[in-house]
Image 1 (cartoon, one colour):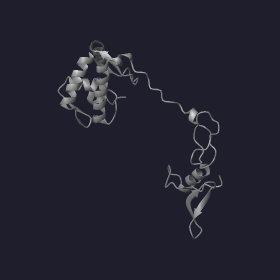
Image 2 (cartoon, rainbow, N blue to C red):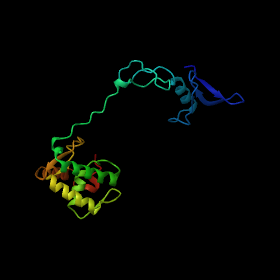
Image 3 (cartoon, rainbow, N blue to C red):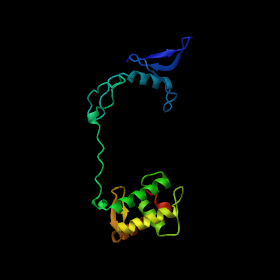
Image 4 (cartoon, rainbow, N blue to C red):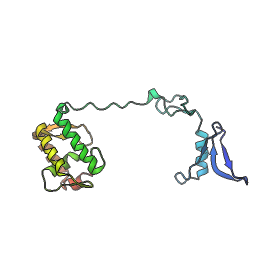
Length: 195
């Protein structure tokens, strides 16, 4: 869009380019090993240029800043959360899931680390309490024990990377856990990261 390079007082180029319509300067120090001037020029050329919606391909409208949007608002896919598994109607199951998720967040900075249910089960029924950046607190283990007792089961997130949290009975959990143990004979310490 008629971009132009800003020049120094001596007339040499600066590598900084501005949009010819809105006059916004574009400055990128480096970009993937390409000369910054070339990148800056490309950004300046694309600044006020009409854009096609990345979803439907039709030209978009300008937004509040005068720039063409990257997509139409109505074309953006809306997040539709997966409906919870019917087993999560159990209030103790929901509390158990939340507690397990909180421990994962505290230990790994991840709302649900892959294999979290197996690791917490092993910690709850073993001698080892270290998990992530520290140990799982005694109070947290006691809450897990009580919640799973009242829920009459354990939280499982489904096969592979399905991530469909559900409350399974202890009878259902045992073969699930045993199958996971066969696939991860090294246990939780290394098996968590084999995805």
